[in-house]
Length: 114
Image 1 (spheres, one colour):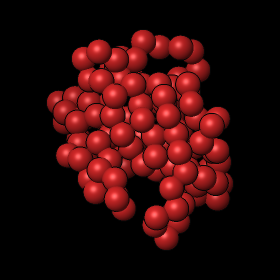
Image 2 (cartoon, one colour):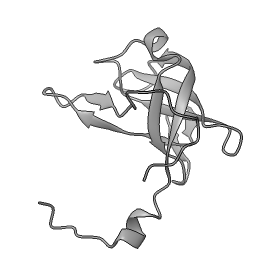
Image 3 (spheres, rainbow, N blue to C red):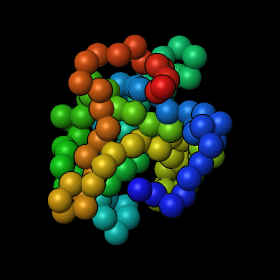
């Protein structure tokens, strides 16, 4: 169990939504290659960019049309030559490489986690 206990109201501050990857391309501008994603979060949030070091488990073309979960209310962050607008969520595999958090059934883009 974690020692960092938070209140439920703190969890509610983190806006986690599902979106569909509409483009994914490889970028090798940093020490480790990463994939630049454009993700459609529906009409209220729109299309947002993110970059993630996913190349150990994913190739860009296989990510297109995949639904992923992301935090959409973090401050944008400069990563290489890209402003990352959302943080895609994942869990480490046995080699500590990210596996994306993705629903197992199609969900409406922009749906919020609860």
